[in-house]
Amino acid sequence: MHSDNEKTALLVMDIENGIVSRYAENGEELSPVQQAVAAARENNMQVIFVRVGFSEGYPEVNPRNPAFTRIAENGGMTLSDEGTQIHESVQPQENEPIVTKYRVSAFAGSNLEMILEALDIKTLVLTGIATSGVVLSTLREAADKDFSLKVLKDACLDGDPDVHRVLTEKVFPQQADVLSVNEWAETVN
Image (cartoon, rainbow, N blue to C red; front, side, top):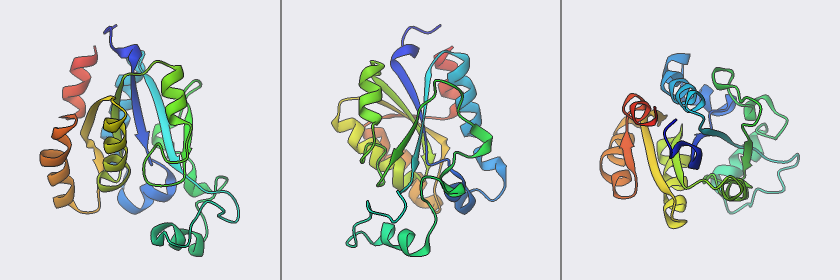
């Protein structure tokens, strides 16, 4: 096993039914995410799933937050709702935490940082939907928390291909190694 693997966590972010249904029309778009999860598991690396979800009645939603106010008005995306469950293509295994966040960043209102600290994780490998949402926000916050970062560009999806390209080619490389799933998988064996 690669010596750094036990200090590395693969974050599978917002690959939940209610978000996948908006970005991935057929399951093919999730194939790189599935490959990344398989590579992490094969190499004894921690996999952590991150989802967004709210309590019944949406007490976490501030009326000044337009995006989350729309969710509260439309209903759904509560913790028990089908929309907030991890997509069947990447079902968590035992000992793979599911972290619930209440904003865009994986750290926002969640116990992610506590889990990473308890597991002595130093490097985060980011995947998720959307590149301009959870991936960008989590990358920025994780960089400020001094994590070593990798982004798996083909395991991130965004509604706007140009925004995805600019982030993965110009913005993310300032704070992270940006790789394809295959390039990354070769480094963890």
